[in-house]
Length: 110
Ligand code: HEC
Image 1 (cartoon, helix red, strand yellow):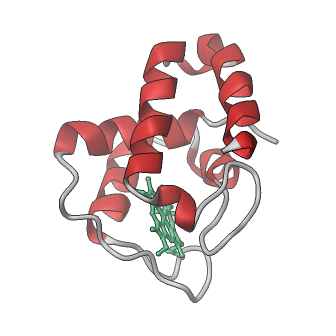
Image 2: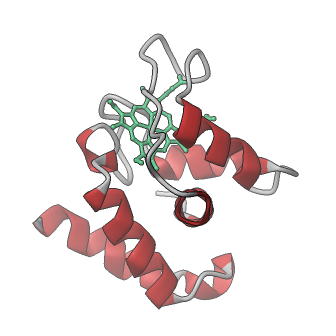
Image 3: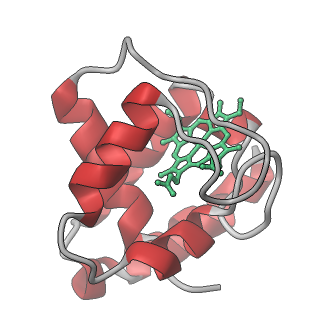
């Protein structure tokens, strides 16, 4: 638990830069925890999947980035970061997928 608190504080400080309110960021992070994202991802280190800060850095500012991450989270992803695929998350609704994708894009650089 402890290791999630620090990025949460950092994130709330970054809300002006990203356009997400601190409340939206906290809600999205809670959703990511509830959906098991942190069993494969961490904020700043590669675990099974790439860190959320690395994903943000790669796609931030790209047109259609959020939509493409929605697709990747929903349908799974492979071959973009390495040889391990991400399984699909087909039970997450569109609105929540969009929140998760925008939140990932808002994670500040390490
Ligand atoms: C079983 C492990 C696992 C879980 C659980 C998981 N991921 Fe992933 N995720 C990965 C791996 C591995 C990749 C890299 C896939 C690739 O190379 O294309 C990835 C890639 C991603 C990407 C980048 C996709 C792209 O287009 O580059 C995003 C965004 C992402 N994950 C978000 C999430 C979110 C949000 C959740 C929770 C709903 C989640 N992941 C749960 C393993 C996981």
